[in-house]
Image (cartoon, rainbow, N blue to C red):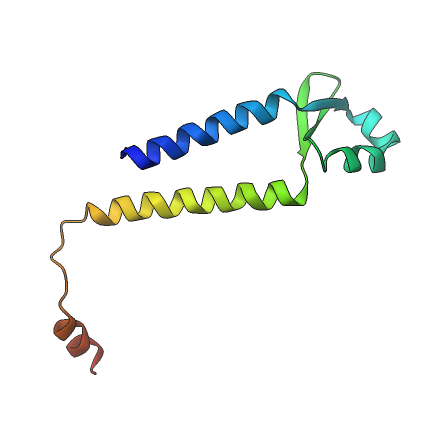
Length: 104
């Protein structure tokens, strides 16, 4: 794994651990009784919903956090794709070859 990717993965892991430590946990029954309160709380911190107090059923996060997490995952996929592309062994295609192949 290349150094920038290692740094990105390390930063993501640390951010994840810090976020999970702050996570509030409620049972499914508690959530059902106070949905709007927990959804409002999820705008500030994640809310873990458990079933029978032990197994995690869901995690509620704010839309902003969800969007940021998705962007980070997409960026990570782009970094991996770029690293893979740099490692390709096929010879580069010249501008003239590309134009000829496209019929331009």
